Length: 71
Image (tube, rainbow, N blue to C red; front, side, top):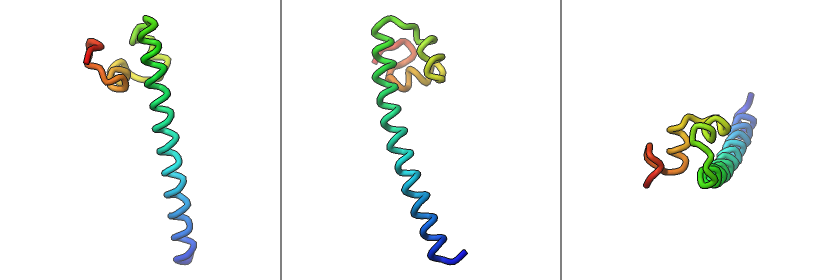
């Protein structure tokens, strides 16, 4: 592989990574909104965590709450 090919591949991978980061930020923001909506609707944190494939602590962290759902 020559230098030009290596640089082209690095740039392509960097673009792909930036796109993935943007998609993850957007998905996380949506997940936060829907988890808050579910919490307000009375869905137990345990169920939210299970459906979101997160731990309960992960849900609390996502929502910005302490262990008791307060902030």
